[in-house]
Image (cartoon, rainbow, N blue to C red; front, side, top):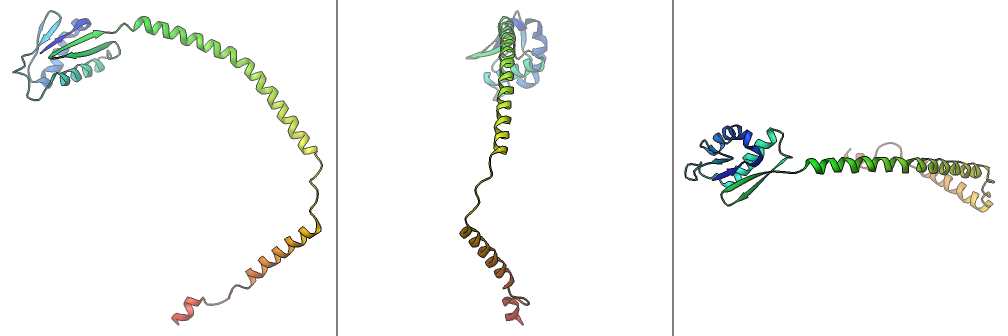
Length: 169
């Protein structure tokens, strides 16, 4: 199994010592590659597992966002991503977007203030509106009867022992 280091040539020894306990053998470093004999690798360890180990190593070193690990057969390739230029462009776009939002926000604030004033005026007009017309006399009589019925029901509740208690004694 081969691991082509690409931009990680300077970290070859660290990666070698990181992989040794996980793979079961110490990979040999030659040029920009780590090599391991397939027969000497611990049983059950596949190239996919080694890829995961390499990604974990990159994460621990804080390099995960700048490198990519590819598997093809029994060969792993570590590629450096060209993100620096992309990140600079993204930051510029973000700054421009923030400026546009700020410029748009100023008129929106003024519009919101105007809407708030309009709402206050509407509320004031509602307060000044004449009171609602009174109910007809027939409606008032019905309400009085309902209230009286409710009171009568409350008074007619039995006092003393409940039915279930009477049966027991």
